[in-house]
Length: 471
Image 1 (cartoon, rainbow, N blue to C red):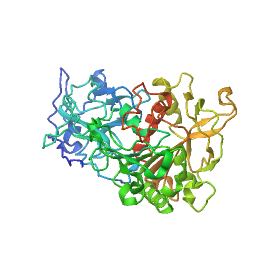
Image 2: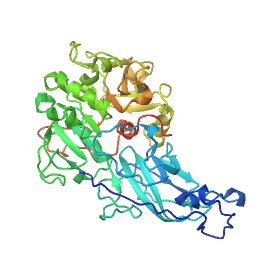
Image 3: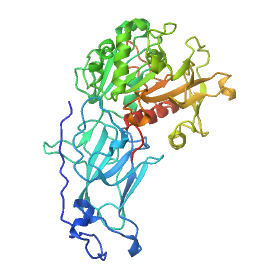
Image 4: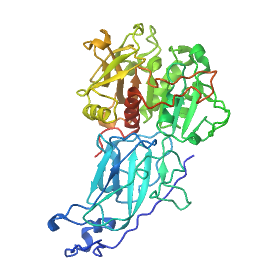
């Protein structure tokens, strides 16, 4: 369980401006013109000097993959503890604790936060969804930039990840947060391997009794589609421990609601008996309450319904796309095109993929294990992030939506929705395998992230973020 932590922002009386360096101060503002840290913001422009700023690059927990759209801000008051379990996180609610100054990272993961208070012990929050690191900057000098080190601007690998500037609570624990993530295994897409490449500490990867922030489940009803079922004997997060039962996880909304994000690996078939209508209703309710869901290929049953059985599914989710469950699987390697036009983050997604080396040609990434069950999407109800373009020679005339996203509940206005659902028609964790005969992480590739894994990483942190646009 997360430890509830409290950090106190020291409020210093207005008018007593503590400026660093030989900077002339203007006449102090009236006492009611500012409060706390805001009293130490300095207007540097009249002096011909640059603004007081903090800068850096935010990375995924692995410390190498820069991240887009991460909020970086000086809180106006104590941001408080994050809620445990699923919650409705809408961007319109604003940043926890409010902000004196705020920005978000660009397509290279960079930020420059201007007009930072020029004083000592300045709090700084780096956050996307429930990934959060809280820092204390010891001394901010006026009218100059202070670059922050990578170790301080990397999202936490685990609950004990204390960088040099990470704030410490009154119990001595670092002020860091991670979402709780459930991952079900499958023999055809090892999503559990991707969390390793993203840098999650092995002690945080456990079964549902191990207390880690990433908890693994297997579906024993999947027959030949069953993925890994247990940890290796030397695994730090639970030596030799068996994974939880995926049927129990998705069998009740209350079980799913312990997790902020649920990831469902492809099992090679829909295996409908292990996903009864009651389970489909539970996942539907979980997403409506604010849950984030990522599913690959044959987990299409959750949004496309059981093939040939329209009564086994969620009618509103089925409207987001047109399905072809009998589509041929005759071309694994292909080119996925990035859709820059159908959703607001399309251009940034395309630019980011170029910046991280996933695209050598803008709007295109090479992929393996492409599949074609999602023929098209309804753009009024969903967003197409990546697709197979039949006009490209490399696709041999195939077409499908490779990455689809929509927010929930679908029957509510867009600005009142709480959850996010992502479907991938390609097997994302290419190069890794998952088998009931190989304990985890025996099938996980240690090679560099593939282009499609990088694309999922962008989407993974995006679905973790608030619903809507950061104000």
